[in-house]
Length: 169
Image 1 (cartoon, rainbow, N blue to C red):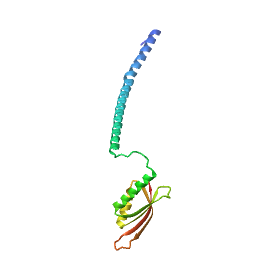
Image 2: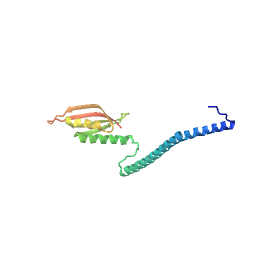
Image 3: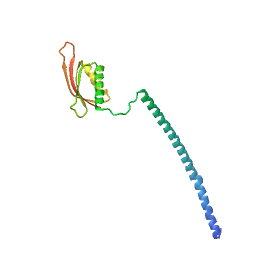
Image 4: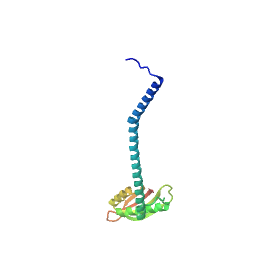
């Protein structure tokens, strides 16, 4: 086969045609496929955003219902006195649930960290065990600093219990 002798014009036309064919192949097989993938991803993002907005609006509605019903407490920081009252309420509920007979609770205000209380009560070993078990399950951290358990001078197996605790709220 003989080499073709082409003019400059024909060489330029062949180069242009070759460029058009390469662009067409690139466009047809690579670019269109990627654009389709991009369109699918955009649709997924749009759907996810709609679901997110819907979920956020549902959360706002539920929060409004909770505050209206009084179920949800606002994130208002409690004062030290309010925290102390809450600790006292929790301690008195724990003693009544456990069966301990609460004689007195005295706050100790000299403590800088936490809230310290001196508790005097009486009851059985089982009542004391239940009280300690309830303390462990409370929403606040309670540390027992001292505990003094003595047998009462009665015929029943009753204990006189004095303890010093620190509550961290």
